[in-house]
Length: 202
Image 1: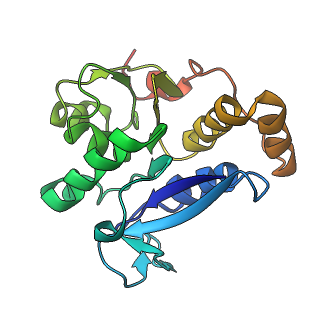
Image 2: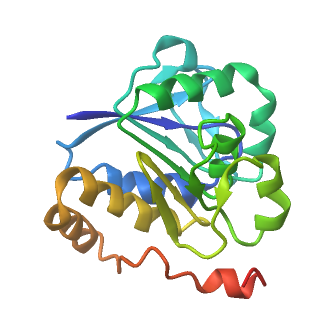
């Protein structure tokens, strides 16, 4: 079983988090999901519901997997050097590092994506990617894999990326079974990105 640090912060995007976590949880034996935050108080999503924290940043930094959701508040978290340093440390230790939407920009602002290909939410793409100028940003992609880093476009795209990670770790057959169990139509083509055109990026 692999340990998965699922970072949360006030205002995290609900589907960014819970959609991928549904997939990354597998069948309950593949990953141990550990919700991580700066403090120990329950953390509200953008829609107000609160999630209980399992570990704080200061308690642990050696996880097998790291997952970072997005949200409008994600970029403000980049002002917290303690959080940035934790992300750097966990990223260095982890086998796979995943981020969704503006969570990818937050990840990029730590420097760990410098020189790597990555993508993020297309609606905010031109406004946010300059915050991490050393990342090789991909305008048209549902998700992007570069080494151990998996990054996705906005919100629902995180579920496709998470299934790709499960396929990478545990095999395509298991990933297909997870998608089927969720009655989810998995878009396996990482380059399928109609939202890039809608946003005027291509």
